[in-house]
Image 1: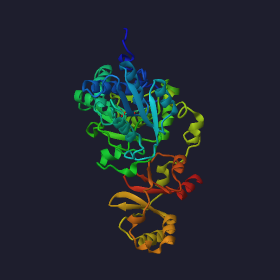
Image 2: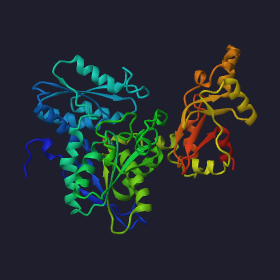
Image 3: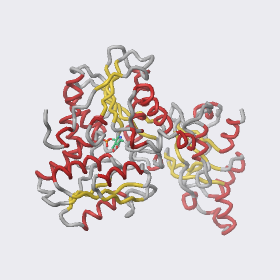
Image 4: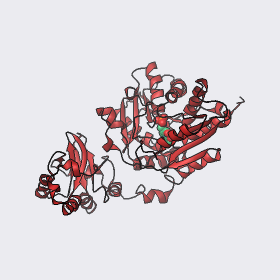
Length: 454
Ligand SMILES: Cc1ncc(COP(=O)(O)O)c(C=O)c1O
């Protein structure tokens, strides 16, 4: 077969049986290897669909410029579509993304604007806002907005979903994929559930992202948000492409577990894939171990290729530097809180600062989470309170709400001591964790010291 342009080669990626990593699981575990697409990722599919739908709607005209906020993979797909169809490309991305990803976009003739990671999506400097601003400023430009543009999910409804159905001869029972914009997860989920409503869909999320809690409680909890490292999945916004009705449940995976599994995929299965692939496989296998029976067939999406992560998860020094490649086995948050019998001591936003200090002194604690109802909304630490009292002794008559600091970071039960210690700092003097019964526990520097000296 002869293809007329590179974008015609997108899709029909292979479905492959896992042979080693599925040890102990009787069900069939299959992975769909999306790096076989010409841009080496799943995103080629939706990039071309967004461009073609925009052309049909008259939003993109000859000589136009495509502007998008992208972590790289969508940019790659858009750059290929732009080359095939004669458009210019400008991409905004964050300084968290691999240099390799940005270099590839530049190699394909795109302009890349790097924006800071640690700002709110609404901040004018964020990569979302910068893309929107450039779109306003540059005439004849088109902003696909992969988060809210439903052509994204439709691409997967029209291609990825049918391919999975055909290649498994309709036998697929479980479908797992990382959720970033939600396009891959929800487009495929919609197609599969229309074919067979009993197919179970499992979204893979990261710690630091809002999805899992939102699905389970309906609460968009800003306290869940913190900078994580896995690229491509998890969000601090709710994109329109995430249809929570199509995702039966979420599994959260730590950066470390994802990184370790990514390397195992390469070494044990010959699958040289990206970091979010390790997250998807780790989370999906955890679920499979507990819930799948022998006759079940699970399909896991592997979104992209390993070259983009050579400087990170495939680099031993980088892995060691981040505490991801330790031969030592460290205690986990679960181990640390298992010894805690008492309920965590908290103060309420409406309490007087003086009463909060009295409580902290009586209990002999240096920091407390601040609650509003069942929600953690802030924190108090003795050093911060002391500083304020020295400046103004009437502070003790104020309400806790007026002086509290940002809430402590929530971590996962399986985070190990090395990772936990890297999250404790001057600004964040303690960590919070939900146990299996959704009870909150606090982990302090003293708890870490005690655990490591055991
Ligand atoms: C590496 C990687 N994995 C996973 C995803 C998530 O896919 P989706 O945006 O379709 O939810 C993306 C999306 O950017 C990605 O780049």
